[in-house]
Image (cartoon, rainbow, N blue to C red; front, side, top):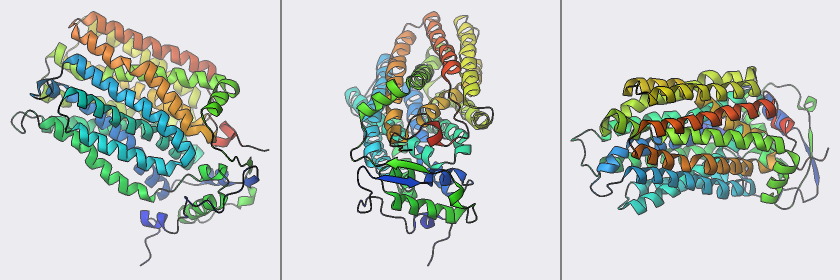
Length: 500
């Protein structure tokens, strides 16, 4: 029986074996292709929806993990087995981020070397195993180790997933798609908050079981996604620069037949001339590209990533601690305050994302970063003065992060589209790693220590510092911003193997 044309099975039918290398052009050969232009001219279709859902689930998983770490903080402190302190909770969050940094670098290198498809399967498997083991943690030491490897899987996912989505989605949809995918982090956050409310309800489960069951949810969700990803093909752009044009052509032709059977003649489209390279691109190529070919873009990407990493990780990882310490919110009620917070964060990219494709990248990045910083300054002043309740603090965060979520998502969009194809995954990894290491890893630990003082003023000054970083990033974006909207990836940055 022939599968329905719009089903995942149909999209996977007759798919070429992307692991075969017998039809690869030899090193040094010059190949010519119009595949990028053909991908960019396509209307949105079922194939794009499948790819975005199957790959973008990474952000949902990350949101689930991060929210659980915060929402379960009270339960982890009350656990008769772990009995964690506020500082240990902050340290475990930093371990998660450290793992994400290490995973991004290692798996990012492999993604550019071995392909997008192989790695987005491997990284999801790493996440599944690590988050399942987190649920079985017997001591704080093991809990921290398993959080590290959970983060490693998620960090590796970011590099494989962002590069694959960028290379499959048509140029005119790329901005809004990337922002919505990144914003889906907050769907996971909402799931985590609901899970915490249900599983931590007094009397429902034993004190040392509820938080373990919550962590097990990520593994269950990930298993379903492993199956769905079978139907997402290798990136034709990745195949193209490695001389595997026959495989890339077969994938693109199959997508064209299914979602847009009537198209203008391909001969009218711009073509690329590429010289096939025998060996893979590595860190030296990345360093030369960033610091010699594109130093302004490198500065822009690094500043955007550092600012949003500190802003988000410092505040969100310790939000539950603030609610419990300063507003007396019970551990089993934390999730209720995270739900509206998550809703504001998802609605920001959803509603503002289109503007990044219409008004443009530069103006929207500057506006969202600057406004996020200014709003946070206002919240810091109100918090320091003791003028907020648990409810108004949550409302204030909803407003701040409606804008900040779009800003943070635009940082990932920027670093994944302004550098050449051959090093895209590794470039994403470098910026994610540096941004998270510099701006994110120390943030949760620092705020955990500040909250441990039970004083409002030190925490407010921490908020001020985060606001200053966002405003400074807006100034850098104004000076170095790249007009990448509605332009093909190869127009934004020529491939390193370009032979024109």
